[in-house]
Image 1: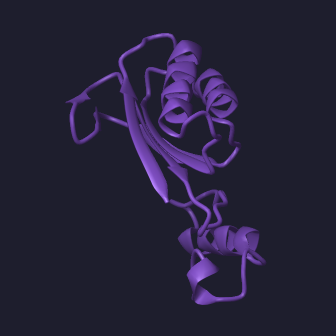
Image 2: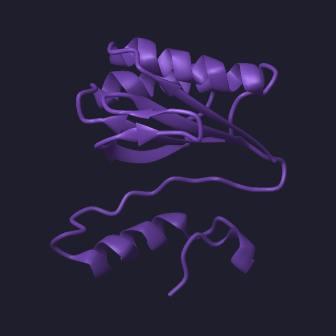
Length: 130
């Protein structure tokens, strides 16, 4: 399993996503990431950011959140975007969304579990178990 951490201060969301994705691809010798976890300041246009990141990193499996302060093991700040690229021959990745967490957290969790059913039959491939 390979990982790569990238962070950018680029203000343009599309350009920032492209920069992060290219950094991840370069770290993986040109190979696509299997998944990316991203944390971005609320100042960014998430649609533009994610579109560019997905294209440059080579994956549609992107999860993350907005943040009020972004960091890596080497840098921290505000208004930035940090990303963790993952590439693995031993793991499967998927992203699921649970909506209305504050209004119905049990229902949101059930949405996520339902979306992830069928990922694998062993507990090591199950993202969540109840």
